[in-house]
Image (cartoon, rainbow, N blue to C red; front, side):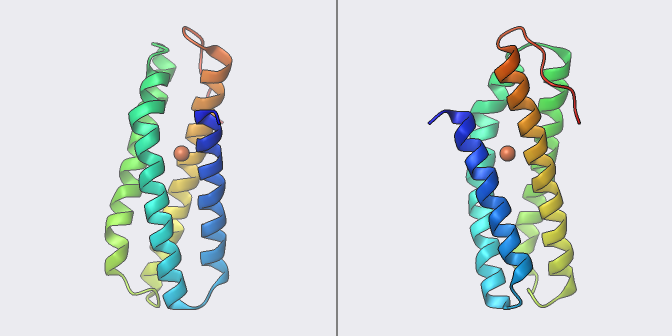
Amino acid sequence: MKATDLLKKQHKEVKALFKKVEKTEDTRQRRQLMEQISTALEAHASIEEEMFYPAVKGLETKKAEEMVAEAFEEHHVVKLVLAELPNVDPEDERFEELTGDRRRRAAQSTRGAARLRRGAERGGHGGRPEPPM
Ligand SMILES: [Fe+2]
């Protein structure tokens, strides 16, 4: 499996888990699902940060540099929310806010990574990543 296919697969898995969180009212199940999402996102972010982003940065274009910096910033926010979530009761409305925020951030991160991936796949070394949507 290509590394980019693995990243795409992980994006789909996290999206599916967020959908399950939205559909369940059971607080214990919600907490378990969010823990699964946390674990999946941490592993996914590590792969992107340690392997994928440096490869994109290696394109050595201003755009690639900006997009990678933006992607790292999005990951930083996701990690802050992930760190806060275990302290919030799933029945508390703040849990909803945090998971909603995390879902948005994860989606942004997914879109950012998809742009980087398409740019890297199209451009190769010296090519130009696709501009932001
Ligand atoms: Fe990603």
